[in-house]
Image (cartoon, rainbow, N blue to C red; front, side):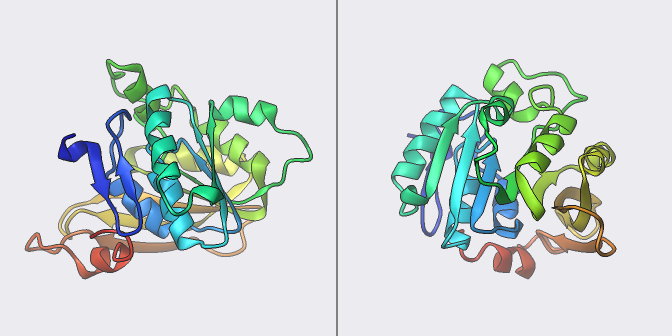
Length: 239
């Protein structure tokens, strides 16, 4: 097993030899900054890292993790079973669209939803189906994702995502049409002199209650050393 096939966090580990998308900065920051609750849904769990981070942060939460890709499910299943949080995480091997169709009025609504959505809708598709599903919005269009999330969230429930700047306008529009308002926009830069690399967006279901809170943080300082903000944000997870 190579280093890239295994990632050790403080309270759990991630096997990722099968999944197309490995543990990365996007998922780390999303898992550390996303809002939670007692019932959390992770759409497109991949290796399960987001679900495990949410389980660690919200100790009384039950988490439902959905994943369509056969290979990613192999990793997620193992990672959940080998963690101390196994009893609080339910893995569903299906598409988000099929999950929505299978729900009934008796199913409880979620307090929060987290998702690291596929967003490379303007780039060439990847040569493997797993990476295409994980990286391209053709597998889960923004409008379908936003409307689906709105249908399973309670009123004032939150939806947290990580996206790049180039799709911010399209994603915002899809969420607005689905009945969300943007509560918080966290701009993530790699270094101070560069532009925003990622947005951590926290939406709330319902009518806007206040102006969007905007914050900007850098992962590294000007001299390329790791920033105090990044270390503080991930101190409970990274060794």
